[in-house]
Image (tube, rainbow, N blue to C red):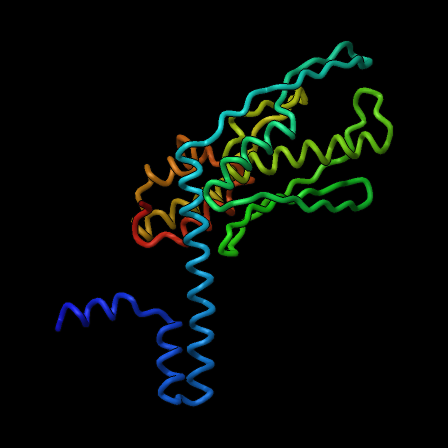
Amino acid sequence: MAEKTEVLVRESTPLTLLNIAIEKGADIEKLEKLMNLHILWEKEQAKKAYWEAMTAFKANPPEIDKDKNVKYKTDKGITEYNHASLGNVTEKINTELSKHGLSASWITKQEADKVSVTCRIAHVNGHFEETSLTASPDNSGGKNNIQALGSTITYLERYTILALTGLATYEDDDGKGSEAVYIGDKQKSTIVDMINAKEIDEAKFLKYMVVESVDKILAADYEKAMASLRAAKGRIK
């Protein structure tokens, strides 16, 4: 009898409680509270499913080759470099993401002389995470206005999905001489404080973020790091 009761308790969810309440003729106020509880529970379950899927994705990430060579002449001489094309990046990443119920999409927004690209990765259960980057049109190599805009959008689409999946280490800087931007001291302190407060296994957290130390977390990955810490219960497994 005790075993049967334990099974029932373990399988109880806000939805089952709501159905029981309906069967017993509970009043509207109680039903509304249970419905709101069910909605919150579903959101938390969707968030948990997202991070579990992303963790599985990161356990066997795709290796992205630099498949495109770019060469053009400038006033300073010849510029040449290799990089991973957007098609190569998205094909390999989306193929692996789809195996875990995840998919990527982009939203582009232009204001004045800047263009912003937001990459969103969503799970089939509904939860999503996103990150954005903004830049000016790339006028290098004698591009016209449309080509300059398209080049920047492609560049930002590639880098946002790499940042959101934690695969930026497979990419180069496209010959632009840019350097990785890491979290600041305040963000580092916030992360460390949460790790200590929740007694999270820092080694496993760093492995999940694919970094050697907290101060090597990319600025673009800060929200992702915080979201995983908020969702963690005790220790990340």
